[in-house]
Length: 114
Length: 110
Image (cartoon, rainbow over all chains, first blue to last red; front, side):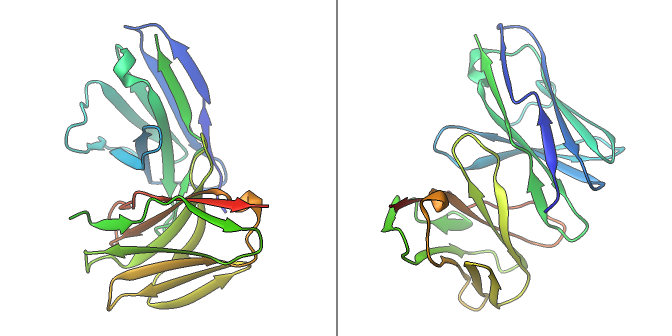
């Protein structure tokens, strides 16, 4: 299957700082990427849909100024958690979609805000 | 009522047994049906991807879709301890986002 990478895999930061997470499709181009958040023992919650060259589409209840998404190229999307607070601590996962509608997920980034 | 319902488990089976997982959904616009496996603290891994009603087999995995009853199944033959994970069904309509079930936790005991 297609490979999606995320960086960093784990990040610990102080409250009030901003954190950037990168999502890359390594062996294919993805016009659409997705960002999810997952709490322990829960299913994935879609945060936003990221389209290359255009603004991201955010799900209801997700603050776009808090979670900045940039889809700079067909292989890279970034999620920036701005002014992070402890309640933003979570597991963030991205996915990239093929033209066939298959979605492949990255390994996830564990964010801990102190 | 959730769009996709999935028994959370845990489902505990002995090694070598058949694991039977299923989901029901309510949206008749769903056309694509995916099953993902997720290990703890890892991203989901795509196991099966089907488009139409019927069966699809890949190694020890068989996916079944019955659009008339809106019922999706995944069977794992000859289960191994390494199959212990959470399994997520995720149907979608064309051009739309995935809709995840809550996931079923499976435990295969040696």
